[in-house]
Image (tube, rainbow, N blue to C red):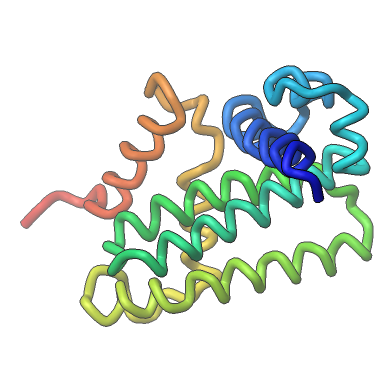
Length: 178
């Protein structure tokens, strides 16, 4: 792929991530193009439709999450933050899929990829006692999805602020301290 074509694809993926986080899954193709600074033709040379862009964003986020886990001895809060951001993108991706049986296979494959990517950092967090030893990868994904859902209902000014607030509440719990 030519360098300019690679750069255009990357801009579209980054625009996809930003718009999915800011506005959800129902963003017009024109908005992706405007945010990325490319034409509709460039969009369709790279992606068949929005769902294909969302899948590329999901793959990009999964790669970034795995790279982040590989770079550092991931603190449980960092682990959950990265997983929550990933699940926000994943939910937007799932929302673009029609309710068809063949899409269940796509869901299962992507869920398995995420579970595999988080296995080592989850095990590390469990080994140092920061996360319950009985928490499965599927449980961690569910917690992250709950934290990521409907951040606009939060009084925070941005999804980043809402994420930090929700993570802190989840990690600290809501029960009174003894």
